[in-house]
Image (cartoon, rainbow over all chains, first blue to last red; front, top):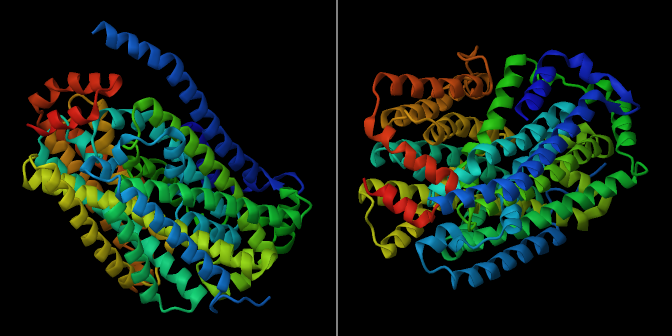
Length: 67
Length: 521
């Protein structure tokens, strides 16, 4: 996630022309990437929560019983 | 186009009173359930994942998001979106590093976690300094936003507006505590999401429901530059510094961290972050449409004419697409937004004052529940009065910028100490204290020396410190100070007690017992 975001910020900081290029009429690469970063953040959080609440918590519970 | 902003708006007034009546009803209901300190700060730890997710979103989407970002996008295009994206990406950090350990280790404030295995007094005093600085900057931004909004809509003087917001907020925090604050946040989040969605739909309807057509129209009118990074972040280092501060700031905001104590366990805390990220992400996607919509439909010059900072772009857009009644609705939503965020901030500040400073520093960790409860309400009153005074003193400041600074202070003062206390065995009391003080004093100091304050406000010729946001300097500095201090002077007891911290961090135990044993050093 950090890599995604800092990649994006570095592009903003150092390569403005690239982000200004249009991939479709009205849609610049910068806006497309921005939307994708937001979606990626949400998807990553979702994956983590599902993983944690399924397998991680089960293993924690097992550990606790074993104490 | 002409605007009715500045004249009394019947729909807006009705909306304000409706929301105030609703939140007072919630307060009355909540007051009967608020019987102890635990209820007052943590809503009896009975909030569900979805509810807390909505409340987190409510706490997070402040006036700066709705009014400020829409305005920034309307006036500078793509650059405004950097804020939208930056505000969101902090959430995965909160989830992966902070949410669960915080829930497992603490009681009411993030200082509970930092001070867990360290000496209480010095750590809590430093943590309180950082928290109060963040709360103060954040509060100023909200109060200034509220004052401007009400002045523009009702034609009411700015000072009256600030006092009214302060009084209403005080009523429901003092009597309803965290239960009322949480429910007010939930109502507000739903209102804000639906208001923004409706507004965005009405904008898109004019462009055949195609965001691309909207962006194209914006590019046609103001040049292709609005779709690319531009003048708001001319300096690469400044862009990077803002990015760092926004990303790590979320994980250091006291009123956000405090929300993780209102849920029953770590799993619920996790789920609530997932909901919150979904709501906030959707909302920030809407700001793309709102900002560009205001740019095309209202036009940049009329927006600037009403407020130079662009803060009124969203209300103006509402009037342009939906008439005065819709303007009234959107204005009432913006007002509700501000009121709810101010309440959350005040509660977090009150927790710092009474739980950290009074109970753990003055009384050495021993105070009856009755006494804690009384001090908590008293602290709320003090903070409410302070926020009214600050709101009036800082009249005319830029809302989004102030919030950006609050993030920078949070990321520098609170975040390094919080992370190190949870994940670094050799962390020490002195290191925590110096790191938090360095972060607080360093970031506030550099803000004063930055171009915005030193040149624009104080009228000096050249800035002593070149960046507008201090994050990129002060965050690593706070980490460095902690590492060096702990390396020079190790603390045995803290190292020994780390195993206990690590166990509780991952396995989780009753938080009530946790804070009690942590408090008795």
